[in-house]
Amino acid sequence: MAKAELTQIPVSEMVIGLTVKLPLSWTSHPFFRSKVKLEQQVQIEMIKGLDVDFVYVIDGHDLLPVVEAPVDVESPAEEQTQEVDYRPLAKKSMRVSQQRFIKCVNDSRTVFSKVVSDPEGAYREAATLVESLVEHLYESDTPHLTLVSSGEADVSVTQHGISVSVLSMMIAHALALSKKEVRDIALGSLFHDIGKLKVPEEIRRKRGELSDVETNFLKKHPNFGYDMLTRSGLFPEAILDIVLHHHEYIDGSGFPDGLTEAKLLMTTQVVSLANDYETLLSKYHTPQIALGILFKNHSSKHSDKLISVLVKILGIYPPGTIVRLTDDSMAKVMMTTADVKQPHVWACDSTGGNPGFRFLINEDVQVKEVIKIDELTEGATKTLQTNNPISFYFNHFSHQENQ
Image (cartoon, rainbow, N blue to C red; front, side):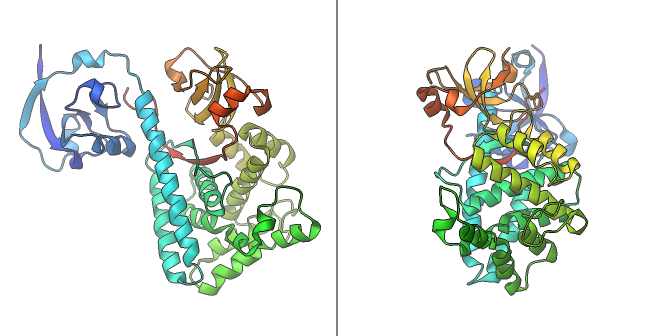
């Protein structure tokens, strides 16, 4: 068998662009073959999480800061012919997204707790949180959305803020807005509902219809938030504009000032759209239905261009959508992919049995149709956890990354 000279490097020296071989059997790592082309930061993080101190470089030696003495190892040619199962890598990448989301929510809570008592500290920590979000967005040129959850029965102000930040930043990324505008959008989204903390909890969490008095009080939350942040004198005008006007619409039907498109900053329009969609999602619980209502009934409130971008980002079957597959399994979409009809799903049979994560691109199975939650059996409803709140975070996994 032919041998190849490979360079051994510590895992700390891995960089995007290298093709590496893991010094592990295929049963001891999630990639299902030892040759890995590093195209995304999440791959590097996953390898660093394995029980290895080094890897072998197969290609991309010119990217290394120091070239070590070559080490002879067996050629992985036979491994290259294996059919690759990417499910473990997809699972791990989704787990990374979930962990990052939880950390962002917790960091956001810390920031909120300091806004009044330590505004400078709150601003510094918020800026640090935003840099993490921006870094996660730009880890690759083609970020996707994945379904995440805080594990709580109700969506908190902070959880909602992170999810709106992610959606808004995805829209901004698709529009090729500048990184400054992306940061403004992230920071404004983070704080957009902070004024709700001034609204009595019995109004914020009321399950039934609000009275006119309660509705009018709730509608003051943009003003409350604007006043809270303005007092510190630290927040740029673009962020304050988002906080004050995230319920404004281009047709003038929003509040508190009834502004029209000409008077609304593009950064504010982006957050307004993401927030409107998330509000519909919390009401209807099904992402595709919420998107359909936004597209059909709220089209006058947002620019056609922005709505089209959001539709493209969410895909035909947004994360959280309940679907029937062509093999008659029931499933919840967990992550969007380049092939909209073959997303990553959590699936079960019609009774809720045989649950498992499925990577449809590896199967001859597609989404057949969207189904309503009340069409599921009790077992399937429990298995798919259809009552869990829906939030979004970035995910950069692609089934093409090792091809």
